[in-house]
Image (cartoon, rainbow, N blue to C red; front, side, top):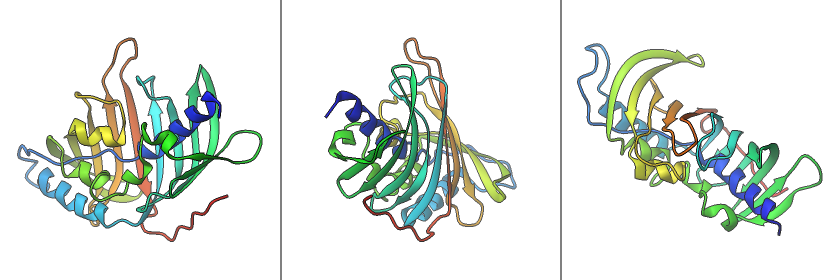
Length: 232
């Protein structure tokens, strides 16, 4: 298998991973009419631990060190199956691919030709996609392990009433979902005011070496909708 194929495998799997950045809290007092961030995030962690499936979109702005993903969109299950599309930048060239993940197998399809089957282990060192909805490792873990957080506002996002929370994620928990990131990441999460499920997360990754700061934005919709993912 060519080096490029393995790179595509790793980056497509990474696309799925980025999906999950969020928080917990050492709470300064929020505005008087807003719930405490710690309470919201613990409720959010419980809600996300119960999620069985979701649709995600990831957008990356800027050149982030160690991250070639530019955009990804697809469906994901708690068991780790996934399908969708990913756009990556490789050697200065934009590459788009379709992906399907079932069990320990990954299938990729580029702009031409059919699907190519690869071992998911080829991408596991970059990211384990089963972590995203895993109650013990994914978004739920990230929400319950934030270092500091403050409830800032109540806002409408994609037609949903949400609470906007400023967060400083725990770098160890965040690295499970965005490999290679270190300390200094800051961001916001928006939790559905009723269900407490994650609606949106936006994270600023600090500059590293010659790479400037960038942002990673992820949105989730269609929670627990029926999803069928099978090998192509």
